[in-house]
Image 1 (tube, rainbow, N blue to C red):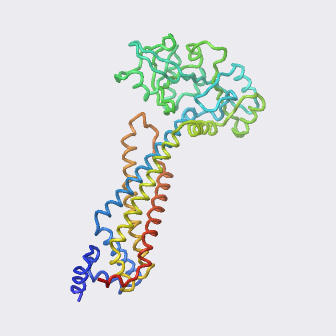
Image 2: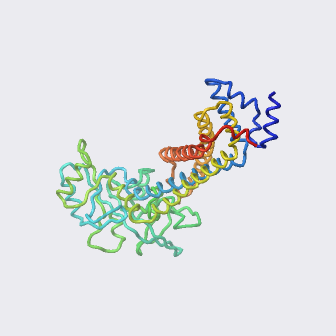
Image 3: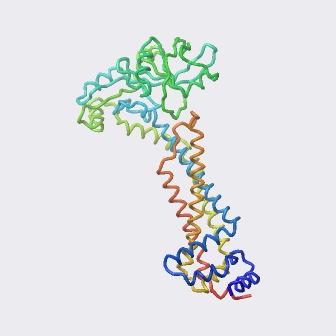
Length: 418
């Protein structure tokens, strides 16, 4: 009986999914409860994997779309953090005080030296330190030149140095015209990989000596970072009436940085921003004044479109080619709700596998790029994974629901027509 039904179905319709066997199809009718659900799921997965071309097409399409979305979002977030890193690298300061016209960290306008003392005179200021930040040209003894971000930190407190090997760097920088360089930026100054300690160079015709190395967070400008004492930094830069870029402030215990920043603005007329607010100012500047958001937005949108097109079209073709199989299932009493559950199970199954492949590809890319200074700080945050999972789940679910409508309206008698 079983062999006869199976043989008849094969010979009459020649559809690959009907080779599941009559025992599988008829077993669906007799099973109930959890056993029936398990059997339905098994039949659905056999149907899906029976057509390997479409199965692999769905998995690879969703995987590529996931890879494209998560990789581009991760790189985009990494670039945005670069706009905030100039502020994030100064861990001790809770408030940055600057000229009212300054919009972001790389846009310092010089303040009068008296501004430092005016800020120190505001009630609630635990300490205030000068901070110099500018772009300079470094020239090696071989004649090579490189633009660098020159930072001058307070001579006494050394506030502004990165936290890594801070004590060692602070000791080394105390020598006259001594410079601490960022390790990742060395390749832009000396491309031969030499040990830079003790190397002599020039900034604005002033002799400097590399006394140590540190690790600074990458900034959007992408320049090597050189740290000096504040007095040395302003001495070797072109003469100007004012050279103080920022005043770094910490509030007394019990006073919120936001309240102190507002008080500084009222009493000095200068612009004062909390560390978090000024870091976000760097991020917002990139968003509002560059084409980066549009470029990455297009790439991310393409990933979504690829997922929608591949998933919707492939599922539609898969269901169209298996209408007779679904008709046979309906003819033996499988309900529309169960049919819908089967199709959703198929969609979620390929969505899960494709999503896993895409996330794995992005993780592998970021892992391989971890040692590349050009991609430092590019991580895949859990929010990116969760967001991509939600998008893929929504796409495969909607594609399945749209594709299954034809099956739900189908007359089961189609399976008996010649």
